[in-house]
Length: 426
Image (tube, rainbow, N blue to C red; front, side, top):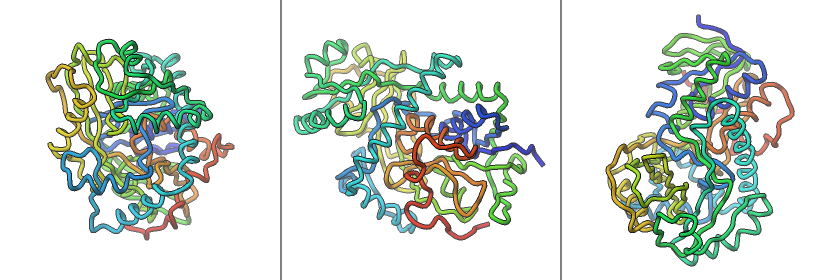
Protein backbone atom coordinates (compact mmCIF):
# COMPACT_ATOMS: atom_id res chain seq x y z
CA UNK A 1 0.00 0.00 0.00
CA UNK A 2 1.40 3.40 -0.98
CA UNK A 3 0.99 6.63 0.97
CA UNK A 4 -2.41 8.07 1.85
CA UNK A 5 -2.42 11.74 0.81
CA UNK A 6 -5.29 14.09 1.58
CA UNK A 7 -5.69 14.59 -2.18
CA UNK A 8 -4.52 12.40 -5.06
CA UNK A 9 -4.39 14.18 -8.42
CA UNK A 10 -4.46 12.08 -11.59
CA UNK A 11 -2.55 14.03 -14.22
CA UNK A 12 0.70 16.00 -14.11
CA UNK A 13 -0.07 18.61 -16.76
CA UNK A 14 -0.94 22.25 -16.15
CA UNK A 15 -4.44 21.49 -14.81
CA UNK A 16 -3.22 18.90 -12.32
CA UNK A 17 -0.17 20.83 -11.16
CA UNK A 18 -2.16 23.97 -10.45
CA UNK A 19 -4.70 21.96 -8.45
CA UNK A 20 -1.73 20.65 -6.46
CA UNK A 21 -0.29 24.16 -6.06
CA UNK A 22 -3.47 25.63 -4.59
CA UNK A 23 -4.20 22.62 -2.39
CA UNK A 24 -0.68 22.60 -0.97
CA UNK A 25 -1.00 26.30 -0.18
CA UNK A 26 -4.02 25.33 1.90
CA UNK A 27 -1.93 22.87 3.88
CA UNK A 28 -3.20 19.67 2.25
CA UNK A 29 -0.91 16.71 1.64
CA UNK A 30 -0.94 16.10 -2.10
CA UNK A 31 0.30 13.42 -4.47
CA UNK A 32 0.27 13.72 -8.28
CA UNK A 33 0.21 10.78 -10.70
CA UNK A 34 1.57 11.18 -14.23
CA UNK A 35 1.35 8.32 -16.73
CA UNK A 36 4.60 9.46 -18.37
CA UNK A 37 7.04 12.09 -17.18
CA UNK A 38 5.98 15.57 -16.11
CA UNK A 39 6.51 17.89 -19.06
CA UNK A 40 7.14 14.92 -21.36
CA UNK A 41 6.24 14.81 -25.05
CA UNK A 42 3.11 12.75 -24.27
CA UNK A 43 1.47 15.75 -22.57
CA UNK A 44 -0.29 18.62 -24.32
CA UNK A 45 1.74 20.97 -22.10
CA UNK A 46 4.88 19.98 -24.01
CA UNK A 47 4.62 21.45 -27.48
CA UNK A 48 2.05 24.25 -27.33
CA UNK A 49 2.72 27.97 -27.59
CA UNK A 50 1.96 28.63 -23.93
CA UNK A 51 -0.30 31.63 -24.59
CA UNK A 52 -1.69 33.17 -21.41
CA UNK A 53 -3.17 36.57 -20.58
CA UNK A 54 -6.50 38.17 -21.34
CA UNK A 55 -6.37 37.29 -25.02
CA UNK A 56 -4.81 34.63 -27.16
CA UNK A 57 -6.30 31.25 -27.99
CA UNK A 58 -9.97 31.58 -28.86
CA UNK A 59 -12.85 29.39 -27.72
CA UNK A 60 -13.58 26.45 -30.00
CA UNK A 61 -17.37 26.80 -29.67
CA UNK A 62 -18.04 29.84 -31.86
CA UNK A 63 -20.55 30.56 -34.64
CA UNK A 64 -19.54 28.87 -37.89
CA UNK A 65 -16.99 26.49 -36.36
CA UNK A 66 -18.98 23.31 -36.98
CA UNK A 67 -19.43 24.14 -40.66
CA UNK A 68 -15.76 25.13 -40.98
CA UNK A 69 -14.69 21.87 -39.38
CA UNK A 70 -16.82 19.75 -41.71
CA UNK A 71 -15.52 21.69 -44.75
CA UNK A 72 -12.02 20.93 -43.51
CA UNK A 73 -12.57 17.24 -44.27
CA UNK A 74 -12.55 18.11 -47.97
CA UNK A 75 -9.29 20.01 -47.64
CA UNK A 76 -6.50 17.89 -46.12
CA UNK A 77 -4.36 21.00 -45.67
CA UNK A 78 -7.01 22.83 -43.62
CA UNK A 79 -6.06 23.70 -40.05
CA UNK A 80 -9.61 22.95 -38.83
CA UNK A 81 -11.39 19.63 -39.35
CA UNK A 82 -14.14 17.59 -37.73
CA UNK A 83 -14.24 13.91 -38.67
CA UNK A 84 -17.44 12.27 -37.37
CA UNK A 85 -16.82 8.72 -36.20
CA UNK A 86 -19.11 5.79 -35.48
CA UNK A 87 -18.71 6.61 -31.82
CA UNK A 88 -21.65 7.44 -29.56
CA UNK A 89 -19.59 9.67 -27.24
CA UNK A 90 -18.23 11.75 -30.11
CA UNK A 91 -21.65 12.10 -31.73
CA UNK A 92 -23.10 13.20 -28.39
CA UNK A 93 -20.28 15.75 -28.04
CA UNK A 94 -20.90 17.06 -31.58
CA UNK A 95 -24.59 17.48 -30.81
CA UNK A 96 -23.82 19.69 -27.81
CA UNK A 97 -21.03 21.45 -29.71
CA UNK A 98 -23.48 22.38 -32.49
CA UNK A 99 -25.85 23.84 -29.92
CA UNK A 100 -23.04 25.75 -28.17
CA UNK A 101 -21.86 27.28 -31.47
CA UNK A 102 -25.35 28.70 -32.03
CA UNK A 103 -26.12 29.44 -28.38
CA UNK A 104 -27.00 33.02 -27.43
CA UNK A 105 -25.04 32.55 -24.22
CA UNK A 106 -21.73 32.59 -26.13
CA UNK A 107 -21.07 36.18 -25.01
CA UNK A 108 -21.59 35.22 -21.38
CA UNK A 109 -19.21 32.27 -21.77
CA UNK A 110 -16.61 34.59 -23.27
CA UNK A 111 -16.92 36.80 -20.20
CA UNK A 112 -16.29 33.81 -17.94
CA UNK A 113 -13.23 32.79 -19.94
CA UNK A 114 -11.79 36.31 -19.89
CA UNK A 115 -12.30 36.50 -16.13
CA UNK A 116 -10.51 33.17 -15.67
CA UNK A 117 -7.67 34.28 -17.93
CA UNK A 118 -7.26 37.51 -15.97
CA UNK A 119 -7.14 35.65 -12.66
CA UNK A 120 -4.69 33.15 -14.09
CA UNK A 121 -2.42 35.89 -15.43
CA UNK A 122 -2.28 37.50 -11.99
CA UNK A 123 -1.29 34.16 -10.43
CA UNK A 124 1.36 33.53 -13.07
CA UNK A 125 2.90 36.95 -12.55
CA UNK A 126 3.10 36.34 -8.82
CA UNK A 127 4.68 32.92 -9.36
CA UNK A 128 7.22 34.33 -11.82
CA UNK A 129 8.17 37.12 -9.40
CA UNK A 130 8.28 35.18 -6.15
CA UNK A 131 9.02 31.53 -6.92
CA UNK A 132 11.86 31.52 -9.44
CA UNK A 133 9.78 30.89 -12.56
CA UNK A 134 10.70 34.22 -14.12
CA UNK A 135 12.86 32.68 -16.84
CA UNK A 136 9.90 30.67 -18.13
CA UNK A 137 7.36 33.53 -18.22
CA UNK A 138 7.25 36.58 -20.50
CA UNK A 139 4.73 39.39 -20.94
CA UNK A 140 5.80 41.34 -24.04
CA UNK A 141 2.28 42.00 -25.34
CA UNK A 142 0.49 40.09 -28.10
CA UNK A 143 -0.45 40.84 -31.71
CA UNK A 144 -3.64 39.54 -33.36
CA UNK A 145 -3.10 39.78 -37.12
CA UNK A 146 -5.91 39.86 -39.70
CA UNK A 147 -5.41 39.10 -43.38
CA UNK A 148 -8.83 40.28 -44.64
CA UNK A 149 -10.69 43.56 -44.30
CA UNK A 150 -13.85 41.73 -43.26
CA UNK A 151 -12.23 39.94 -40.34
CA UNK A 152 -10.35 43.06 -39.19
CA UNK A 153 -13.47 45.23 -39.27
CA UNK A 154 -15.42 42.60 -37.35
CA UNK A 155 -12.67 42.50 -34.72
CA UNK A 156 -12.58 46.29 -34.47
CA UNK A 157 -16.34 46.38 -34.01
CA UNK A 158 -15.92 44.13 -30.99
CA UNK A 159 -13.39 46.36 -29.24
CA UNK A 160 -15.94 48.23 -27.05
CA UNK A 161 -17.32 44.94 -25.72
CA UNK A 162 -13.81 43.69 -24.96
CA UNK A 163 -12.97 47.00 -23.27
CA UNK A 164 -16.05 46.56 -21.06
CA UNK A 165 -14.54 43.24 -19.96
CA UNK A 166 -11.26 44.94 -19.13
CA UNK A 167 -9.25 43.61 -22.09
CA UNK A 168 -6.79 46.33 -23.20
CA UNK A 169 -6.99 45.90 -26.98
CA UNK A 170 -6.21 48.61 -29.51
CA UNK A 171 -6.36 48.56 -33.30
CA UNK A 172 -3.20 48.93 -35.39
CA UNK A 173 -2.79 49.78 -39.05
CA UNK A 174 -0.14 47.81 -40.96
CA UNK A 175 2.18 50.82 -40.63
CA UNK A 176 1.66 50.95 -36.86
CA UNK A 177 2.38 47.25 -36.64
CA UNK A 178 5.65 47.79 -38.53
CA UNK A 179 6.68 50.29 -35.84
CA UNK A 180 5.89 47.71 -33.16
CA UNK A 181 7.48 44.79 -35.07
CA UNK A 182 10.18 46.37 -37.28
CA UNK A 183 11.88 43.09 -38.22
CA UNK A 184 8.75 41.25 -39.39
CA UNK A 185 7.01 42.04 -42.68
CA UNK A 186 3.31 41.17 -42.33
CA UNK A 187 0.94 40.86 -45.30
CA UNK A 188 -2.19 41.89 -43.40
CA UNK A 189 -5.03 44.41 -43.45
CA UNK A 190 -4.78 45.32 -39.78
CA UNK A 191 -4.06 44.05 -36.30
CA UNK A 192 -5.05 44.32 -32.67
CA UNK A 193 -2.53 44.69 -29.87
CA UNK A 194 -3.01 43.51 -26.30
CA UNK A 195 -0.44 44.86 -23.86
CA UNK A 196 -1.36 42.07 -21.42
CA UNK A 197 -0.40 39.38 -23.90
CA UNK A 198 1.94 36.87 -22.28
CA UNK A 199 3.23 33.33 -22.65
CA UNK A 200 5.04 30.64 -20.70
CA UNK A 201 7.92 28.70 -22.21
CA UNK A 202 6.94 25.06 -22.29
CA UNK A 203 7.87 22.47 -21.28
CA UNK A 204 10.31 24.41 -19.08
CA UNK A 205 7.53 26.11 -17.15
CA UNK A 206 5.83 22.79 -16.32
CA UNK A 207 9.11 21.19 -15.25
CA UNK A 208 9.99 24.13 -13.00
CA UNK A 209 6.51 24.28 -11.47
CA UNK A 210 6.74 20.57 -10.67
CA UNK A 211 10.13 21.14 -9.03
CA UNK A 212 8.71 23.89 -6.83
CA UNK A 213 5.79 21.68 -5.85
CA UNK A 214 8.14 18.86 -4.82
CA UNK A 215 10.15 21.34 -2.73
CA UNK A 216 6.91 22.38 -1.00
CA UNK A 217 6.11 18.76 -0.09
CA UNK A 218 4.00 17.53 -3.02
CA UNK A 219 4.74 13.94 -4.11
CA UNK A 220 4.95 13.46 -7.87
CA UNK A 221 4.87 9.90 -9.19
CA UNK A 222 5.97 9.51 -12.81
CA UNK A 223 5.24 6.45 -14.96
CA UNK A 224 2.18 5.78 -12.79
CA UNK A 225 -0.86 4.98 -14.94
CA UNK A 226 -4.25 4.39 -13.33
CA UNK A 227 -5.51 0.83 -13.82
CA UNK A 228 -8.67 0.92 -11.69
CA UNK A 229 -10.56 2.16 -8.66
CA UNK A 230 -12.22 0.63 -5.62
CA UNK A 231 -15.28 2.48 -4.33
CA UNK A 232 -18.12 1.97 -1.88
CA UNK A 233 -20.99 4.02 -0.49
CA UNK A 234 -20.41 7.01 -2.79
CA UNK A 235 -16.74 7.17 -1.89
CA UNK A 236 -13.59 6.42 -3.91
CA UNK A 237 -11.59 4.25 -1.52
CA UNK A 238 -8.54 3.21 -3.52
CA UNK A 239 -6.78 4.12 -6.74
CA UNK A 240 -4.83 1.30 -8.35
CA UNK A 241 -1.90 2.25 -10.59
CA UNK A 242 1.11 0.71 -12.29
CA UNK A 243 3.14 2.32 -9.50
CA UNK A 244 1.14 0.93 -6.59
CA UNK A 245 -2.14 1.52 -4.77
CA UNK A 246 -3.21 4.77 -3.09
CA UNK A 247 -5.92 5.40 -0.51
CA UNK A 248 -6.51 9.18 -0.63
CA UNK A 249 -9.09 11.33 1.10
CA UNK A 250 -10.06 13.01 -2.20
CA UNK A 251 -9.34 12.27 -5.85
CA UNK A 252 -9.02 14.83 -8.67
CA UNK A 253 -9.11 13.63 -12.27
CA UNK A 254 -7.04 16.13 -14.28
CA UNK A 255 -5.71 13.76 -16.93
CA UNK A 256 -6.27 15.91 -20.00
CA UNK A 257 -7.68 14.05 -23.00
CA UNK A 258 -7.55 10.81 -20.97
CA UNK A 259 -9.87 12.21 -18.29
CA UNK A 260 -13.02 10.78 -19.88
CA UNK A 261 -11.60 7.25 -19.97
CA UNK A 262 -10.39 7.56 -16.39
CA UNK A 263 -13.74 8.87 -15.14
CA UNK A 264 -15.59 6.11 -16.96
CA UNK A 265 -13.82 3.54 -14.77
CA UNK A 266 -15.94 5.03 -11.98
CA UNK A 267 -19.10 5.17 -14.07
CA UNK A 268 -18.87 8.94 -14.60
CA UNK A 269 -19.45 10.26 -18.11
CA UNK A 270 -17.55 13.37 -19.17
CA UNK A 271 -18.81 15.00 -22.35
CA UNK A 272 -15.24 15.51 -23.47
CA UNK A 273 -13.42 15.00 -26.77
CA UNK A 274 -9.74 15.17 -27.72
CA UNK A 275 -8.90 17.88 -30.24
CA UNK A 276 -5.64 17.29 -32.08
CA UNK A 277 -3.10 20.06 -32.36
CA UNK A 278 0.43 20.32 -33.67
CA UNK A 279 3.43 22.60 -33.44
CA UNK A 280 6.47 23.18 -35.60
CA UNK A 281 9.58 24.65 -33.96
CA UNK A 282 12.24 26.21 -36.21
CA UNK A 283 15.46 28.13 -35.78
CA UNK A 284 14.46 31.76 -35.27
CA UNK A 285 14.85 33.79 -38.47
CA UNK A 286 16.28 37.29 -38.29
CA UNK A 287 13.07 38.76 -39.67
CA UNK A 288 10.56 36.98 -37.45
CA UNK A 289 8.22 38.61 -34.89
CA UNK A 290 9.54 39.54 -31.46
CA UNK A 291 6.19 39.07 -29.75
CA UNK A 292 3.63 36.27 -29.70
CA UNK A 293 1.25 36.57 -32.65
CA UNK A 294 -2.14 34.99 -33.31
CA UNK A 295 -2.87 34.64 -37.04
CA UNK A 296 -6.47 35.29 -36.26
CA UNK A 297 -8.58 34.02 -39.14
CA UNK A 298 -6.72 30.73 -39.29
CA UNK A 299 -6.16 30.22 -35.54
CA UNK A 300 -2.44 29.63 -35.87
CA UNK A 301 -0.20 30.89 -33.07
CA UNK A 302 3.41 32.04 -33.37
CA UNK A 303 5.68 32.29 -30.33
CA UNK A 304 9.30 33.55 -30.23
CA UNK A 305 11.39 31.31 -27.95
CA UNK A 306 14.82 32.92 -27.95
CA UNK A 307 16.78 31.30 -30.75
CA UNK A 308 13.69 29.37 -31.84
CA UNK A 309 10.27 30.21 -33.26
CA UNK A 310 7.22 27.99 -32.78
CA UNK A 311 4.09 27.76 -34.96
CA UNK A 312 1.11 25.92 -33.50
CA UNK A 313 -2.22 25.14 -35.07
CA UNK A 314 -4.62 22.47 -36.31
CA UNK A 315 -7.90 21.73 -34.56
CA UNK A 316 -9.02 18.27 -35.59
CA UNK A 317 -11.79 16.33 -33.83
CA UNK A 318 -11.15 12.73 -34.86
CA UNK A 319 -10.58 10.51 -31.83
CA UNK A 320 -7.71 9.64 -29.51
CA UNK A 321 -4.95 9.11 -32.08
CA UNK A 322 -2.63 12.13 -31.64
CA UNK A 323 -0.95 11.82 -35.05
CA UNK A 324 -1.49 14.80 -37.37
CA UNK A 325 -1.09 14.28 -41.11
CA UNK A 326 1.90 15.80 -42.87
CA UNK A 327 -0.54 17.66 -45.13
CA UNK A 328 -2.11 19.43 -42.16
CA UNK A 329 1.38 20.25 -40.84
CA UNK A 330 2.17 21.68 -44.27
CA UNK A 331 -1.08 23.64 -44.06
CA UNK A 332 0.16 25.36 -40.89
CA UNK A 333 3.37 26.36 -42.70
CA UNK A 334 1.36 27.76 -45.61
CA UNK A 335 -0.78 29.82 -43.26
CA UNK A 336 2.31 31.29 -41.63
CA UNK A 337 3.75 32.14 -45.06
CA UNK A 338 0.49 33.83 -46.07
CA UNK A 339 0.76 36.27 -43.14
CA UNK A 340 4.57 36.54 -43.15
CA UNK A 341 5.48 35.91 -46.81
CA UNK A 342 9.02 37.28 -46.61
CA UNK A 343 10.06 35.62 -43.37
CA UNK A 344 13.25 33.67 -43.93
CA UNK A 345 12.83 29.91 -44.08
CA UNK A 346 14.89 28.16 -41.40
CA UNK A 347 15.78 24.69 -40.19
CA UNK A 348 13.07 22.69 -38.44
CA UNK A 349 14.09 21.78 -34.89
CA UNK A 350 11.07 19.70 -33.88
CA UNK A 351 7.54 18.79 -34.90
CA UNK A 352 5.03 17.69 -32.28
CA UNK A 353 1.38 16.74 -32.06
CA UNK A 354 -0.91 16.13 -29.12
CA UNK A 355 -4.46 16.00 -27.83
CA UNK A 356 -6.27 18.86 -26.09
CA UNK A 357 -9.30 17.98 -23.93
CA UNK A 358 -12.31 20.04 -25.03
CA UNK A 359 -15.81 20.42 -23.63
CA UNK A 360 -18.56 21.24 -26.16
CA UNK A 361 -19.05 24.79 -24.85
CA UNK A 362 -15.33 25.58 -24.31
CA UNK A 363 -15.75 25.90 -20.53
CA UNK A 364 -13.77 23.40 -18.44
CA UNK A 365 -15.31 20.84 -16.12
CA UNK A 366 -14.47 21.92 -12.57
CA UNK A 367 -15.93 20.59 -9.34
CA UNK A 368 -17.30 17.49 -7.67
CA UNK A 369 -18.51 14.54 -9.74
CA UNK A 370 -21.74 12.93 -8.58
CA UNK A 371 -22.51 10.48 -7.11
CA UNK A 372 -19.17 10.50 -5.31
CA UNK A 373 -18.48 12.64 -2.26
CA UNK A 374 -14.72 12.75 -2.75
CA UNK A 375 -14.24 12.76 -6.54
CA UNK A 376 -13.47 16.00 -8.42
CA UNK A 377 -12.77 16.85 -12.04
CA UNK A 378 -10.43 19.46 -13.54
CA UNK A 379 -10.50 18.85 -17.29
CA UNK A 380 -11.72 20.22 -20.61
CA UNK A 381 -9.61 23.40 -20.77
CA UNK A 382 -9.06 22.93 -24.51
CA UNK A 383 -6.52 25.02 -26.39
CA UNK A 384 -6.72 27.66 -23.63
CA UNK A 385 -5.33 25.28 -21.01
CA UNK A 386 -2.27 27.25 -19.99
CA UNK A 387 -4.36 30.40 -19.62
CA UNK A 388 -7.19 28.78 -17.62
CA UNK A 389 -5.42 26.16 -15.48
CA UNK A 390 -4.15 28.46 -12.68
CA UNK A 391 -7.61 29.87 -11.93
CA UNK A 392 -9.29 26.51 -12.50
CA UNK A 393 -6.95 24.85 -10.03
CA UNK A 394 -7.90 27.36 -7.36
CA UNK A 395 -11.62 26.77 -7.93
CA UNK A 396 -11.14 23.02 -7.46
CA UNK A 397 -9.03 23.60 -4.34
CA UNK A 398 -11.73 25.87 -2.93
CA UNK A 399 -14.37 23.21 -3.58
CA UNK A 400 -12.34 20.52 -1.82
CA UNK A 401 -11.59 22.84 1.10
CA UNK A 402 -15.27 23.76 1.49
CA UNK A 403 -14.57 27.44 0.78
CA UNK A 404 -16.77 29.89 -1.06
CA UNK A 405 -15.61 29.70 -4.69
CA UNK A 406 -14.39 32.89 -6.39
CA UNK A 407 -16.58 32.09 -9.41
CA UNK A 408 -19.93 30.36 -9.66
CA UNK A 409 -19.09 26.66 -9.98
CA UNK A 410 -22.51 25.94 -11.50
CA UNK A 411 -21.27 27.08 -14.91
CA UNK A 412 -18.52 24.43 -14.79
CA UNK A 413 -20.76 21.57 -13.59
CA UNK A 414 -19.73 18.07 -14.57
CA UNK A 415 -23.34 17.17 -15.46
CA UNK A 416 -24.29 20.27 -17.45
CA UNK A 417 -24.77 18.16 -20.59
CA UNK A 418 -26.84 15.51 -18.88
CA UNK A 419 -26.52 12.89 -16.19
CA UNK A 420 -22.87 12.12 -15.44
CA UNK A 421 -23.38 8.41 -14.80
CA UNK A 422 -22.22 6.16 -17.63
CA UNK A 423 -22.47 2.85 -15.87
CA UNK A 424 -19.58 1.41 -13.89
CA UNK A 425 -16.84 -0.29 -15.90
CA UNK A 426 -14.19 -2.41 -14.26
